[in-house]
Length: 119
Image (cartoon, rainbow, N blue to C red):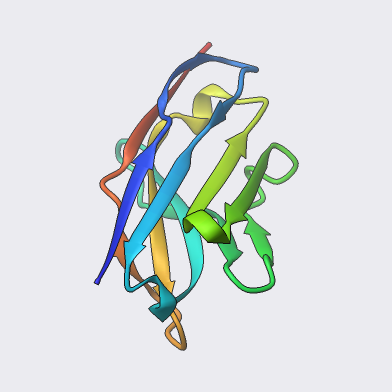
């Protein structure tokens, strides 16, 4: 099993920044990528960014491209999404997830952290 613990959420004004973190523990060698999803009230959970452990390849949804940057610290098994120029529409519960090697779905999930952006 892989355990994920997120931190760093909170309340920020529009235009501000937040940095989240997600620390992975357990059988992390079974995973090849970490993703960040978000879910706003009444909306489906959606992937906003991801990064691979190996080559550090990243993906960003169009809605956050140019504003969010995700980085990793392999030694700490921790992933950090840096969120800049936040907008009220970024308000959501943010979840980190780990993808198992060879499987496209994200199998392990954190508990989620609330990000609220006030206008």
